[in-house]
Image 1 (spheres, rainbow over the protein chains, first blue to last red):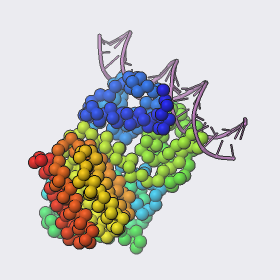
Image 2: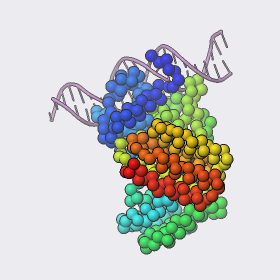
Image 3: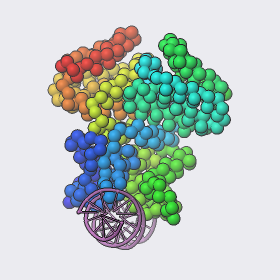
Length: 224
Length: 224
DNA sequence: AAATATTTGTCCGTATGTATC
DNA sequence: TGATACATACGGACAAATATT
């Protein structure tokens, strides 16, 4: 039955499951067949099937519950982070600079949209994060506030792909940057400028603050 | 032993494996312990362990060979495509526009770097793809050429994260766009402009061509 | 409410194929 | 040519969670 030794079974099954989902144009909430049905129709053991299907679950494509079954999830921007994150690990610190470059391109590219869509609610959150940053001493928590600040900026831009990408770039950066010493006052100041320009609805000042933010972020690792 | 029923075992194991890799700062080529060792030290069955570890393999983090074991892979920008791709499916066509917006931000953000780093070899490849586009009738293959064209532009930019992101955005777009009818002559023309500006080393013309490319890409679905 | 069926979660044992020495 | 180490794949069994009647 298995003349094609080319690929491992669980890889083939994974591909088959992808095909199953795409060819039927399944939508979020749709139910998948049971493990028994799938393993039978694919002609593999339940074990092999699970290795493929648990990949779909762990990467956030489907959810499973005992007694219920498996349903297709809707888009989830968090799974990407852990996925990309692990693939970036170990390839050297220059990846931090790379992902910072990417973030710069994305954030400046979406600056107009951020400026146009941000609401009072988001501005209040930015203010909150800013105040927390001033108080925060722990490095990890500090970068967490940093990432949440940026996340909030583009929250209302209505682009899930953007959110996912920014999150991914951040999760990579955070991993490495916690090992560096960075200038907290300067970081705070950069974000304060962004916040105040947004609050004042001054687009030119906002762009300037954003440029300034990324302009000097590449150097913080060498000096301070 | 399992008082914490909060999470399913394979999810916990997956997290543990991530921690294992990151906390030891493992580098590509490093070997992981065997399945037996891992399942014992984590106190789970080999089955559960495999469900977690096969996720790492399918998403491209590690490779496994019988008789050898598992080794950490180096960064692979392809895995993301399939990963992100499936998560985008079914959430509506507006995701195409979202990923196009993201591509626009990325490509324009990296335009300078593209312009500065592109070599004669890349230019020849661009020319080749262009000629193929003119001949190609099949929709899927046409979009494949399109994506390869853009991939080649940023090949020498030296940013793996960028490449991964652009690929991901493309894999999403391609899926949906094959279902639309798009204006092939116009698409060809847009890429010809980009190519000729690059070949002529005219930065202003290049930026103009790039803007033009994305400016009208959002409308191709409605008119033609 | 309670019993039963369904479906996933978890574990074990065993046989096979493949690379290394 | 073994002998060993390791991943691959299968099948069965029972527990736990949920749905159904």
